[in-house]
Length: 420
Image (cartoon, rainbow, N blue to C red; front, side, top):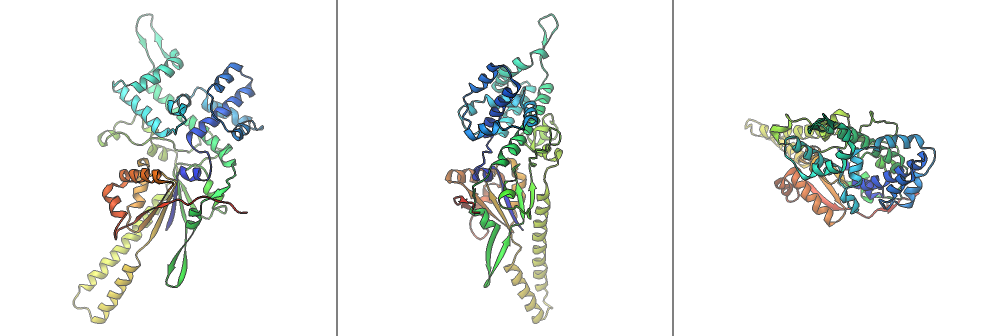
């Protein structure tokens, strides 16, 4: 089995603006255009312009294409009075024009609120309260004519955050379908091409190793657009797939957080379970074909090891004739020279611990050779550090050197122009 695993770095390598900052910039452009369509007060539009965001000219033009009023209306419903959109829009990280990791930021928000529910006040929620809750939820305070005021309950805030997260995810889906998938890619990866038609020598013959499985952590269909137009490969969209025909309810894109609770707490404290990735994968019924693939790999590995043991056991039988014993030894030697082999190619994935269960299930098989592509030295360092969190340093050391080597890091080749 030959599996290609791709992450957001795959889309970025093909020149697609799929960073979350790109999404926010696009949203602001659409936001402004919608106000023009609705002939809203000019001060509101100027207020958006004062954010002074650097939106490329081609993106501005895309925002003014006609015939998309329904899409604009739905987008407006997704971002209007959306606490996450407001939060990310005003994030200091964004003002500094640096990378924003939505999932890390969401996790910090959720953990801060969780701590506050336990009476542990912290600066993060205080900040959230100062710039949003006091402004948006002032009507939720009940004045009984005394000094006693009942503030918004944490459960109400949690529900508001979950609804708004799903609205933001749908807005992201619209962005991917209406903008990203309309961009024509001009370059492709020679590494992916090499994987696609990978070759190995077997005696004097060249035998093709055909790529047959794709695990995509992306929501886009970039691989299919550029490398698999006939859709001959089986693809598992782990986090769901963007589809403009979806709506708020049918969207199946996963955008959540990793488990942050300790073992004794995670099965009891489920107030924020709907924000977690594993829950969203189950709830939204996203791809899980990879589990069958892992089971198939393990089964073949188990069958191979059992066959080896059976033949070794037979050889210990002293009553065997020399002819039969020699035949078994020959079969055993042949088996050892041809163990089951599987290849895992990882391109554009950060190897983050949030995907630990999937990565471990594939990498920690002795019959799987893992090739990890990296963009530059800095990217290599981050991938090594992340892999330690996933499989542990002992396994990493064992699998990157010596006779037990199963992991190799490769520098990505420069992209090449698509030829007609």
